[in-house]
Length: 112
Length: 107
Image 1 (cartoon, chains in turn brown, yellow):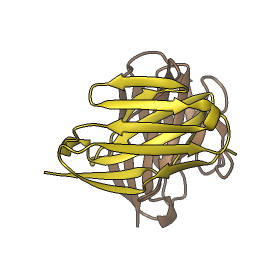
Image 2 (image 1 turned 135 degrees about the horizontal axis):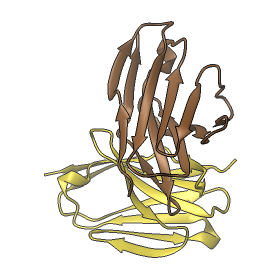
Image 3 (image 1 turned 45 degrees about the vertical axis):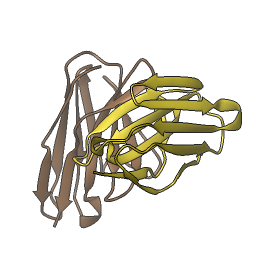
């Protein structure tokens, strides 16, 4: 399976600031996704990162809050904008290969 | 949307014991996967199993698609099996995750 590198692995941020999370894959992949895992909770799909076009957001997530870039088939970024303590979560990059989903190691975000 | 229910929510085992985790779906799915999240947070894909049975070492999974459930069997559990087990179903582009089963294996 593809090797997925995500950074930063963790960060502590101030309310009102923004953080950009990077996801690098060691091979070209068509399907790339961003998930959120709130403390002690399950995973929720934020959006599908589409190469060369705007991301497809799930209900409850908007582009102004979670802008996503996907400049090529190996790289994507997720920005968490104007952060509040409610944004404290683990953010996970994932890729689809042969019907299976694989995850990066995640970014643990704490907002003070 | 699809609802995914996992049971039990928590499970404590003695090392060497066997266990069965269950996942029920509210509707048919064409993509069903099991994941293990270790205590450090890393998610590992265990099985892609929309139907039938698969085995990988001490783990095996069975999905009965017509009855909308899947089972994950862990045999001879080890402390390294501890963590949270998630099932997820839907389409690859939109998997709905259950709330997970938190497994603790005691030495």
